[in-house]
Length: 387
Image 1 (cartoon, rainbow, N blue to C red):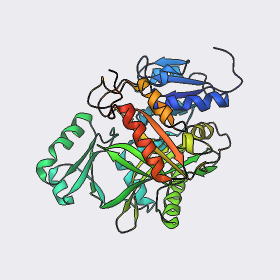
Image 2 (image 1 turned 180 degrees about the horizontal axis):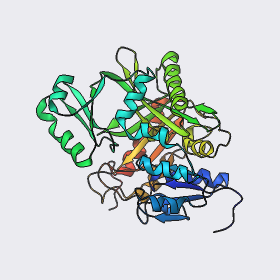
Image 3 (image 1 turned 120 degrees about the vertical axis):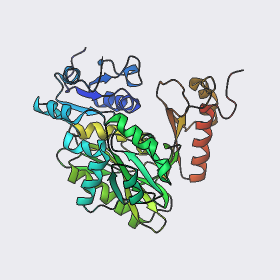
């Protein structure tokens, strides 16, 4: 490898989040070393210095972090005890294990947020169906660890609906968390960056919509959100980043209720799908600010470049032969020269996130139409398949 005067940052996980860290790392002259879960995964296509291995194996983690002063993550699933071991080895783990556990374990998160008097849905750890009945229907059951993109989450309305959740928890060796089914107007996300020295930056609060439990669309900033609620959401995110000792990006997913409150739904301590709009719509993207934060560099401005930015995910359709992604470029880019497309180098599978598009401008309806059209075209819903 060519010699660099900058320290090498180890990144655990080879998904699209690590892939999208690569471009700002190049601009910053910051070498990355990747632990990929398999050959040719998304980030492994763009990061040259890489090791293929299991993030659950401590010797593998030690190999990939050897000579790296700092390690960060594409996902939250590295075992907490391994992160403590890396810290004992002298590696700066960012975010650290004592912070990251609040994104790894939903029961730990709920307990800590209650201690901090942060508004959350009513919740309780439940050991069996009888305890769910006592908690009350309808409710949401979640495995305390391992869930993402709607996996490990069940809406239940009767005792007979609970079996799948408990079977999944037993198989994974985790607990079940019951939460009230919130009557919400929409979902919001408050994204902040925080460095070890305590500097913090807050992005505009955004609105997100979900499709089958997967983030589908993000509008930045959230339309018709009062300054009071926006400020409260940012205050919660900044306070949690400080109280939990987060280093890097923290995404706080929120419910805006029909009676005008905000409740914390989930936490993520890494770049987040609801922050992908920042690549083209903010002065400094979430990926660059995550790198700056974990390396304790001054943070960049989170200010928006345009009045509106809309992000729409490109999700794989039911037919993997339809919607070949590169084939979508001629139409999408010719139709909308200002469109920004981000593809992840993944094979199409039903419901899989394979890319996203960003559209920005002064007219929200125009941005929505442009982004939705482009995502549908790449997906293959608008007849772009080859003859």
